[in-house]
Amino acid sequence: MSVTVTLHVFSGRPDPAWEIPDHQARELADRIGALSQTTLLKPPGIAGGLGYRGFSIQSVREAALDPHVYVHAGIVDLDRFDVNRITDTPELEEWLLSTAGDAVDDAVRKYVESEMRGSARGFAPTLAEGWAVLAAPAYDPGKWNNDPNIMRRNNCYNYADDRITNTFAQPGRGSGQEGPYPPTCGGTGAAAQRDGQIPVSSAASTPAQGHFIALVIWPGNDYHWYRRDSNGHWSHKPGQTPARNTDNSGQPIPNPEVCNRGPYTAWCGYYQCIPANTRVL
Image 1 (tube, one colour):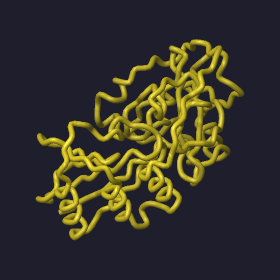
Image 2 (image 1 turned 90 degrees about the vertical axis):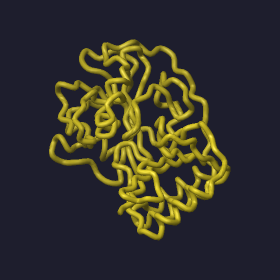
Image 3 (image 1 turned 135 degrees about the vertical axis):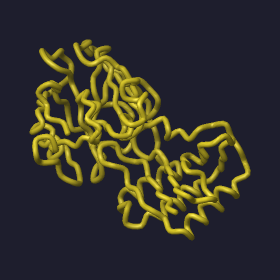
Image 4 (image 1 turned 90 degrees about the horizontal axis):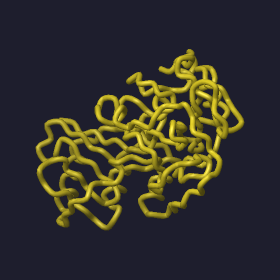
């Protein structure tokens, strides 16, 4: 018997995961069983986004738990022919985080705790003027989302490069030297340049080849990439979640510099990506 908890919080890096012992597995089953209020809603984290997206729990031969459970924003998705449970407190999610031990570092833990308490504030994006339509990849989320294996094994860097490698690609890996941890604008950007990305000062023109991508950083924790599509707007794929063309406020992204990026507050800049000339792995 085994129960594995995954905290969905990163985009470029693999999400932290850990196995809980039998006594915590029994406590988890008791905590879920004690929730009596039901709902037809799904946890919002399932649809993706940047930053904290909840917890998934996978159990093997654990009679008291469903094989797949997803918990976010007070909603417990039991992944079976049963209505989901809902609570108006973050107690269950706080308890799940408490089981992580060293699998989650202090900075990420504090951020997630803040999100659970609802202290993070969203903001509406400011629309930018004058974006030219590019000869770039079309926004085609089905290419990334319809196959669960592709969605799970490709991240924001794969998506930005429009390259499905099923390796959860990392900047610099394809050219032999991965970017540093913690990620930084300079270190991650340099790793991407070694892969073949070309830094540019803006994305307001039309490149002769390829398309524009943009790098942002969650300081001390993670990186994230956006991609400019043929319609002139931007899209992205947060980690293992679906590709999407909206920001953390659910708004379209005409300008990634000013959209709601959740905890990815550091703006690093634009790059020209020519997929045929990049080494993405």
